[in-house]
Image (cartoon, rainbow, N blue to C red; front, top):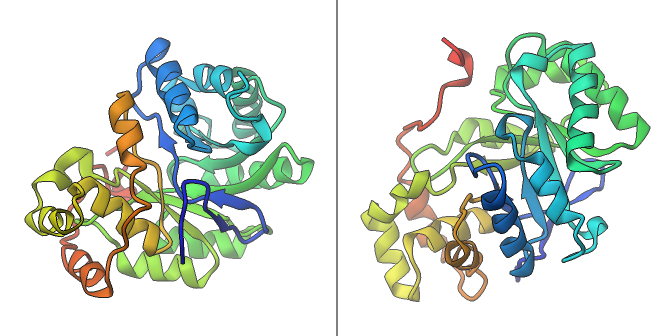
Amino acid sequence: MTFTLESTITLNNGVEMPRFGLGVFKTKVGTETENAVRWALEAGYIAVDTAALYGNEAEVGRIVRSGIIPREEVFVTSKVWVNDLSYEGTKAAFDDSLKRLGMDYVDLYLIHWPVNDWRGSWRALEEIYQTGRVKAIGVSNFLQHHLEELFEIGEVRPAVNQIEYHPYLQQPDLRSFCQSNGVVLTAWAPIMKGRVLDVPELVAIGEKYGKSAVHVTLRWMLQTDVVTIPKSAHQDRIISNAEIYDFELTDAEIETINSLDCNARIGPHPDHFGE
């Protein structure tokens, strides 16, 4: 299959989600976020991932609405933070996110972590989804047992599960469970905060194609149906991160990357978040 920066993956409700986008976690509020989003859209990105926690929804919304690309062609994701995980809290938080974004809908809205009253929060997301103010709903950092419970209590199956995912943490059982149940995986920390540059196997594969270990990692995700949202606030890196469409990994190279999994987390374990 031939991929481009505009390639999408079909969610379980028929919505088309870009396979590649810009993440803005820890991108500073103000000019830094505005510049990052502007540079990404100018480079041809069509997806931006933000969250209430990040504090930069207003900047994301301002640039998305500026007309670099028509709003309806940009896929915007946001998330409800743990403090608002309840039925009423999530409804209010969603309204606040829309106001900050300056939009009348978002493309994807996620529960950020499976803590507090995430069950009540999901009920609120289902009701919001029925209003059309969000095109798809999903979760973040959910493990298989969380998803199994959600499948039991929910009426709408989550379209996406955004998890920590990179060469050193591949969670194969969770990935298989999601893919077999129609839940698309999105990777956060896909390049391990730059640490992939020090992984010899990735460097060696990259040398074959004249690419970096970052390119190899992002291409690996592209070819294995994992959506990826690398974060950068630097124009050259934003442009460079998207230079993954002029080479293709072999099956053997994909297996080499698969073999790097060592269950090494950068962020917290979902079952112990906040402890």
